[in-house]
Length: 214
Image (cartoon, rainbow, N blue to C red; front, side, top):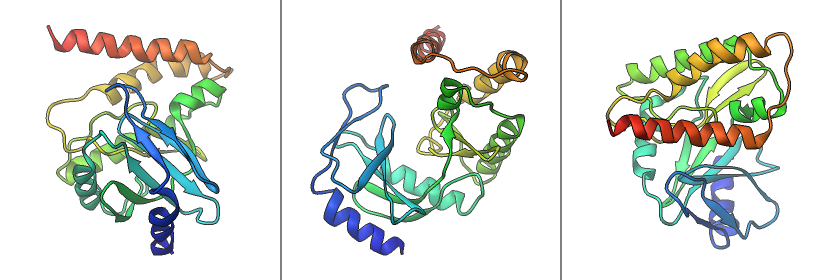
């Protein structure tokens, strides 16, 4: 089935779609999406698409001016099969065929007022520990690449797991969950305006950049 999906990617999607990264730390832009393909997410390197009749698969296409697909392929091969991660089924020059992970990102959960249970945090902690046992270095794990589905947590972007150095994004998010989110939202959840979340996201990035230059 994934081979049929990959054939459609190459015949229907790749010749038409255009993906480009304008700014280094901002999501890539996407244009010319042919029906019946749907954009389900875009990050700083690539965009992810689905096709309704192939519900178990997605294709992640890298922007024309972004690199790193070779490293991501290597990461997926090292991860293998794990319940908290996607799985690599195939790849081409600028795309990956992956197992679809349903759910909403933690970022969108806060935005929509969907409560994030503690089990999600525990699942991600276990998933990142497993990645370390496979010789990887979990990096850039944050609220936009972790999803919540049926009360469980999943990591949807592992493209930076070969990077060297220490990344504290997940530890910072977990601390914010325990100190701020859980006490505030456990009894009563409410949506947080997008503009506030974006202000927090950009403010956090500025703060981390300033700390790294000290």
